[in-house]
Length: 227
Length: 117
Image (cartoon, rainbow over all chains, first blue to last red; front, side):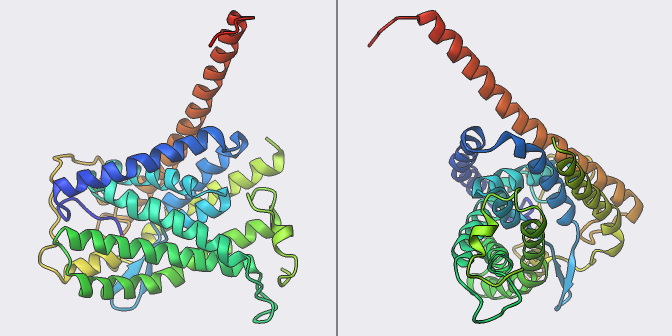
């Protein structure tokens, strides 16, 4: 949901840049203080993967398609929403400046929706849902898989809502119709792209290389379904 | 870096490159959710307000046109560039951090027994 230039008045674009600046500052502080340097190669490769995955548009009904944003996945794997903010910001920069995908003036707005909102919503909803014991409902799927799916879905849906609100404030979209259509499209995209891929990626890493993850998979699966 | 870590990263990066190559061929040409929505509303008009022209516009990824082969090259370029930029930024941050802490150490050695305010 990369907003192109021309959709948002310049003064609003400027405000979005101002809004994200402190978040970027805190994200860099996180990288400075809390991030394990040994994770830097993971960050690089994850960002590259997110860039590539964003190219994979998946068809959904109504002659539309959608792609994963990847903020939730990055935040969950790296253990902080600030990681998601930084990675998505850099991906969006490359997309806007090199490929004209998303406006350069609209970068502030796009970073806010796909970088900040998606990362925080995805990370914290994953954190909360992961604590739920799903064993009574399904013995097959672990809390991690379900939590990652929900985190991914909520991240994408929330960023779609924010994008719609930004475009409503810009006078580009009507509010109710915009929310209904964007909401509908991204509810589906959230299932087939974001939720699914986030869940598969996080569960795979948790199963085979849980040492990479910031959360302790062994601790979280006590009492939850195995696998 | 441990060998298994390097292998994992190589595999993930390899998958990213693979996706870059096949995406132009398999990705849906339908407009994405935002584009589809904006087609319904007459106020939604692209305008190049910044005057900036990107070097590889419309890499053809989201079904916006452009031939698949050149799109694949553009995507590979973007994938590699993203990796490079992210590594540069984070290693840059850690370099600055290390040089600052070295300066702090040097300064505190110079101060020695200074019990200042």
